[in-house]
Image (cartoon, rainbow, N blue to C red; front, side, top):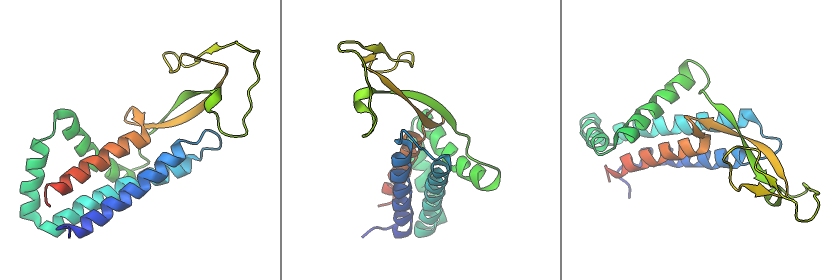
Amino acid sequence: MSKTPQAAKKLGQAQFFLALLRDENAKVIGQDGRAIEAHTSGCLGALKSAVYRLKKDVGRAAFTVGESRFKAGLDRVERHRYERMMNQRDFDVHEGDVPTTIAQRAIPAHLAPRGVQFFAPPGVVFPNPIPGGQPAFSIGWMIAQEVHLDAAAVETTCARYVDLVARLLAEFQ
């Protein structure tokens, strides 16, 4: 049995929102920006709630000591990410939307969703329209949008946040 049942429950909710976020950001056609924003907000809110509930589950004094030990074990980048996660949720709730950007990615024709057809002469390949994109060549390309948060795909950033909170909870087990 977990020593932090309420915090673990909130972490589970964050993982649920992360799964929805991954599914939504993987869409090539018909991506709904509102869904991305809602799932991102839900994930951030659940993560911050997990930290608050952890503090309640273990007590303020034990939390302060454990969180300090946890943060001391993080490298500079992860420590900054942990602080940023907490601040992004507050910004989202109290000030405005979490700042996201849209990046383009090229999907090779052979990986396009079902129902999309490409026609090209046999043996003809075209370079990736995104400079430095992988693979370098394909018989055709489909351009898709990908929502980014902190210079990475939004689900990658939220997955890193979920990992940090899971590791924080593990400190108290």
